[in-house]
Image (cartoon, rainbow, N blue to C red; front, side):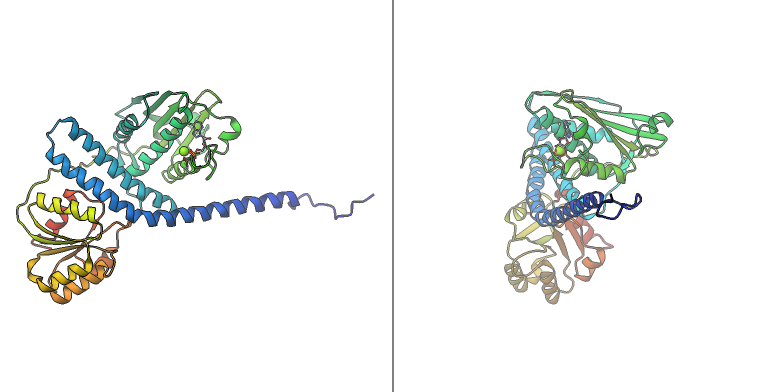
Length: 407
Ligand SMILES: Nc1ncnc2c1ncn2[C@@H]1O[C@H](COP(=O)(O)OP(=O)(O)OP(=O)(O)O)[C@@H](O)[C@H]1O
Ligand SMILES: [Mg+2]
């Protein structure tokens, strides 16, 4: 006796298979839509967030200079400043993942990032977590964006902490240089023969079973209660590592903790640049009009300009700025303006200023994560762009650039 339906061809997929493929595609589409929504949200908050960070970074930077070297308050404020810069990097980071903002890859000594991560973890995790480390300072540099490496470490350390939250335990971060040979390369398809830097994050927390481990890198996979985990952490980590031609491995057992190891290809040793030069009061005393509707940004810039020996006029309204400028156009040497403001935007303001004084240099300051292109800045009549958040040093550099003999 024959079945009612046609006999199934061995090579054509069955209905059940097609249905599961459709379900998979639907799931991927949902994930893509969520990533897009996250990107849009991040873009929206980045601007506001950078204004908040302008105050955190700006005021910390100012306070640092007032405090005696080697003092505890100075060291503490230095931590606030570093955390502020990291937060700035993370804003960029969310956008990098969701919108492919350009990364800043550079030869990177991983032990420096690791040290900073350890310091931050020590100041944020409770004392029930015993933080240990084992760092090989001679491990060669890798080519990477420091903000992304920091994000990888923070994502993994946060997971480790969450796995030990209720019971306490040991969190160990280690770095070592590893020559990957044929044997090791055979254990992980992403590894090739060569020299790698291996970062390991080990915890003694709740661990995972095999079934969970198979899904941990999927976007949206989480075992945490609603509101505690989005399930994005490890998928971000994996995505970053893939772009660096690296690899990630995990080993874990329920109740026996977890160990994540990240392999990044080492590069030839190169000099790492230092960016901290002392600020000097140039004392030239330019008259600078600063326009930003965010009051705290204005206040921090007022103090920065004073510190640099300039005369600042700080206004929070673009309409008022235009009014004052049109009455006293010769009272200013430079204008620095925010872009997004009620009434006139920074671009419109620059246009109006130049109608009154065509030689007036105007600098744009903006909290958008991606700087406008040089062509855009020039076309809008700006002399330069100052990205928020900024510290006294960057403000000083922009002013120096404007008044440099060749500018
Ligand atoms: N160190 C760990 N110990 C035990 N389980 C872990 C560990 N790290 C990750 N996991 C498991 O992997 C899952 C996915 O982790 P992932 O970081 O991607 O998302 P999340 O931590 O749940 O949420 P989010 O990172 O977005 O806040 C976690 O929910 C947890 O089940
Ligand atoms: Mg996580």
